Length: 306
Ligand SMILES: *[C@@H]1O[C@H](CO)[C@@H](O)[C@H](O)[C@H]1NC(C)=O
Ligand SMILES: *[C@@H]1O[C@H](CO)[C@@H](O)[C@H](O)[C@H]1NC(C)=O
Ligand SMILES: *[C@@H]1O[C@H](CO)[C@@H](O)[C@H](O)[C@H]1NC(C)=O
Ligand SMILES: *[C@@H]1O[C@H](CO)[C@@H](O)[C@H](O)[C@H]1NC(C)=O
Ligand SMILES: *[C@@H]1O[C@H](CO)[C@@H](O)[C@H](O)[C@H]1NC(C)=O
Ligand SMILES: *[C@@H]1O[C@H](CO)[C@@H](O)[C@H](O)[C@H]1NC(C)=O
Ligand SMILES: *[C@@H]1O[C@H](CO)[C@@H](O)[C@H](O)[C@H]1NC(C)=O
Ligand SMILES: *[C@@H]1O[C@H](CO)[C@@H](O)[C@H](O)[C@H]1NC(C)=O
Ligand SMILES: *[C@@H]1O[C@H](CO)[C@@H](O)[C@H](O)[C@H]1NC(C)=O
Ligand SMILES: *[C@@H]1O[C@H](CO)[C@@H](O)[C@H](O)[C@H]1NC(C)=O
Image 1 (cartoon, helix red, strand yellow):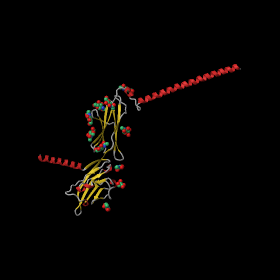
Image 2: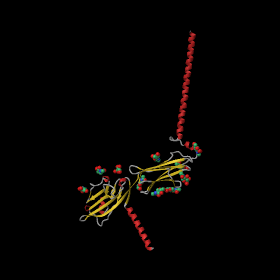
Image 3: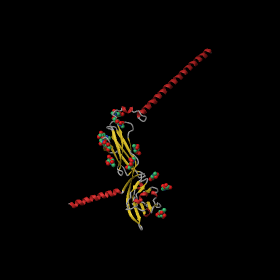
């Protein structure tokens, strides 16, 4: 009984050890940033650089080219470096003699997601491997914020159905999306959800939520990046109104009220024009009539003179 439990205890410790070892070898970096791939071997006394070789390469063999960075006998030699890594790798030159062989990888992109191996050789008589280490680079993308929109500047009426949309772009790895009611923090089911992978490997999210406006609306859209353990939250809040008249008080250029105002203004102008036309026409008619009178008179005169 005691043996068994101590055996379990050992197993438990081992499991813990394995997990920490795994975590030590994983580096998470966001797109565009600089990743530090760690490789440290503390020497008894300082290394002599021209008796040292440091090779950084891709360990998972998924690419035809695997040379990432080479330091050979006191010099960097990048003649065989893969084109992908050109100008993007640095060693800590002044720390090499102290056994810090870590590599800086600049401007990380999704294509850099590999397991990297560091191999260190030291020359006594011949070069011998004294240390090697693997580091898995995980790349995450979180360059954008979610965009949440709903009815613009119109307070919905009580009972009215309201549609909100939440979009997010260029996330990596595949994000999770949650809609929550921020009044009580309960979760809500999306009415539609589409997650698509773009050509660059990143993911875009399009989601909508339909709710009935029974009370003031306070809704959150959460985009979760599990790799970064990060939640991006965006809120939407809008007050409902239970009177239809308040809506027309909100005179704004983009709102129906303003449009009604515009129609009224045009109607007034048209009415004015009509009155003016009428008046002009009347004036002309009166002219004509007086002209006709004169003519008649003239005719009469002619008749008289005849
Ligand atoms: C770099 O390494 C290549 C072979 O890997 C070798 O031909 C070349 O001479 C080296 N260049 C220098 C400057 O050491
Ligand atoms: C690397 O940098 C050098 C000088 O800084 C530049 O001449 C060269 O074009 C760059 N190569 C690449 C592939 O960016
Ligand atoms: C970073 O890499 C991307 C391609 O992965 C490139 O378009 C961009 O110009 C690079 N930025 C810098 C500062 O080198
Ligand atoms: C992306 O993640 C990094 C690291 O966790 C963080 O510093 C940065 O603010 C995040 N970017 C956005 C837009 O949230
Ligand atoms: C989300 O994307 C859809 C489809 O492209 C679009 O109709 C909608 O206006 C977008 N919503 C936001 C808040 O950008
Ligand atoms: C949000 O929670 C409040 C309080 O529980 C509730 O009155 C309201 O109807 C909820 N809103 C939605 C859209 O579910
Ligand atoms: C809902 O969650 C937010 C953030 O997690 C917190 O600040 C707020 O107090 C919570 N509200 C309720 C009613 O639980
Ligand atoms: C993000 O929010 C969701 C939903 O509220 C929650 O389940 C998850 O644990 C949160 N993740 C982090 C990293 O805070
Ligand atoms: C909703 O009403 C509250 C007070 O009644 C006010 O503080 C808040 O700004 C209003 N929100 C919106 C979006 O109009
Ligand atoms: C608001 O007006 C609509 C019709 O335009 C009507 O159906 C609704 O009952 C009205 N709501 C209130 C609260 O008066």
